Image (cartoon, rainbow, N blue to C red; front, side, top):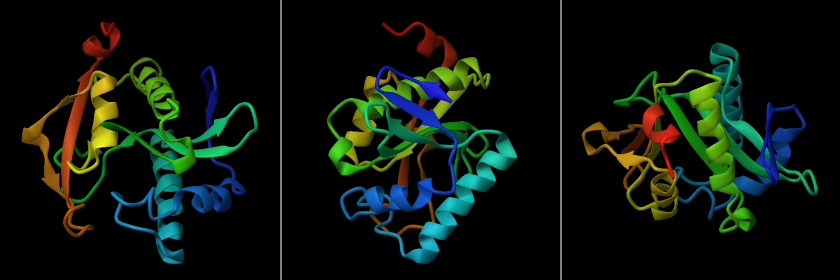
Length: 181
C-alpha cells in the first residue's frame, strides 16, 4: 500500500471491480483507450491486471480517496506487454481516473507516488509511459512529471483501430527522477 497526502494506492479486492468499472468505463474516460468495454472486455481487463500482479508482484493499483474511501480509478506500474510494443518488459507507469476526479491533481499525485515506488521499491532504472498523440491531457501529465518523448520508441498496437492504434512513448530514468526540481 502506498499513501499520499490525499490518496491510497493499494492492491485490488474482489469487490473493487464493479465500482471501478462503474466509474471508469464511460465514454469520456475510455475515449482514448479503445472505447467503452463490454462484459467480455471488462473481464479481460480484470484478468490482465490480476495476471500481471501475480506474475510480477505489482500491477496498476486501486486509487482510493482518503476522505471518503471512494475509488477514483487506478494508477501504478506494470511490465509493458502490449502487442507490437517497442518497450516490452520495461516498467510502465499508467493511470485511469474517473472523469469527476480530473483536474484536481489526483493523477499527478498518484503517478508521482508510483514513479517513486518504481525507482525505490522495484529498482527500475527507467520507466516508460504510453498514450496516443490526441490524448493531450495524458502526455501533458507525463511532461509535468519530467518524462520526455522518445519518438523512436513509438509503435502501433494492433488491438486498436486508428486513432488509438499509434502509441507514443515517454520515458524517464532514475537520475532524472531523483534530480527533478
